[in-house]
Amino acid sequence: MPQPKSLYFAVPGDLHALTGGYGYDRRIIAGLREGGMHVDILHLSGEFPFPAETTLAATAALFAALPDGAQVIVDGLAFGVLDDLAVKEARRLHLIALCHHPLALETGLDQTQAAALHLSEERALAAARSVIVTSASTSRLLLQEFSVPQEKILLAPPGVTVSPEALSPGQSPARIPVLLTVATLTRRKGHDVLLDALAQIRHLEWSARFVGGADFDPDWAAWLRAETHRLGLDERVHFVGNVADPAPEFARAHVFVLPSRYEGYGMAFAEALAFGLPVVGARTGAVPDLVTGDAGILVAPDDSAALADALARLLTDERLHSSLRQGARCVAQTLPTWQQSVDQIARLLEQSQARSA
Figure (cartoon, rainbow, N blue to C red):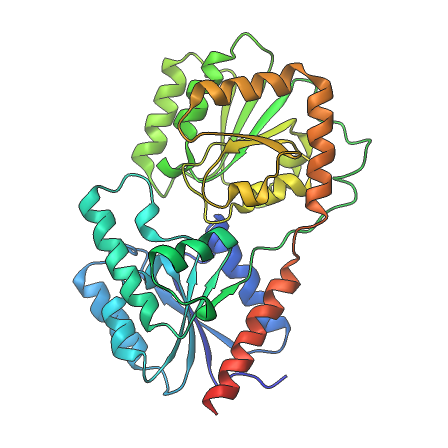
C-alpha cells in the first residue's frame, strides 16, 4: 500500500489519559504504525476546547511548520475551535477532522457557548478535506446540522475484542449484584441521575462501582461524592478512579449502567456488550444504535425514576437478566474490530494521497 508522504496526528492534552476518546486515538495510531505508516504525534495544549489566545498562536505556529502537502488528522476536541487555522491551512495541508462528537453538545455549556462552538466547528469542518466519525449517529448529525457533505464523511467506529471467556455460560459475577459504570466523572455522563436512581432502589441488594477519573472536572467529581454522602449511599457506591485495564471490573459485574446525556459512540457500552452484560442507559446519541432492545433497557435522558425501574427489573427478574445477557452476547458478535477501522482510515489516507499526487 502506498504510504502518505507525511502523516501527523494532532492530539490535545494527554494522549495516555484513560478516556474513550483518547483510547480511540491510541488504538488508531498504533494500528496505523503496525501497518507500516510513519505517524508523528503533534502534542497540543490541554486547554482545548477553551484555549487562550497564546495557545491558539502557538498551535498556529506548530501547523505552519508542517511541510506542504502533509496529511494531518486532528482530534475534534481541538479541531472544533481551530476554524481560523483550518481555513488558513486548508489549501496547503490535507486536514482530516476526527469528530468523536460535536463540542456544542457537551453538558454544562450555556446557550452562548454552545452557539459559538457550533459555529466554529461548522466552519472548521467545512475546511477539512475529510471527516472521520465514530458512529452513524454522529454522521447523521454532521450531515443534518453542520452541513458536512456525505462524501466527506468516513465512518470508523471503535473496535472491540470479544473474549471467549467473557461470553462463556459459566461466568460467575460477584455474589452481591454489582452495578458497573465506566465513565469519566463529567456532567455529560449523568452520574447524578444514576445516584438519584440508586437512592430509589436502596431496598434492593446491590453494590455500585463508578470507574472513571475525576481530573477533567474536579468540582463535579467532588459534588458527586458529596451527593453520595447526602443520599446515605457511601457504603454501597464506590468511586474506583481510573483503571488501566477495566476487564476485571466488567467480568465481575451483573449489569452495566450509564445514563449519559449524550454519546457520540460510547466505547464503554461496546465493552460491556463484549462481556455479555445487560446494559441500562439513556436513549440518546449513538446509544440506541449500539444497544438494541434485546441487549438492554434504554430510558429517556435525565429520567431517574425510569432508570431506577429498569435497574430494579434486572435485579429482581432473573429471566429478563438472562435474556438480555444472551442478547448482549449476540450484539457483541456483530461489533467491528479495531483492525477494520484502522484499515478504513488507512484506505482514506491512501486514496487522498493518490488524488493529490
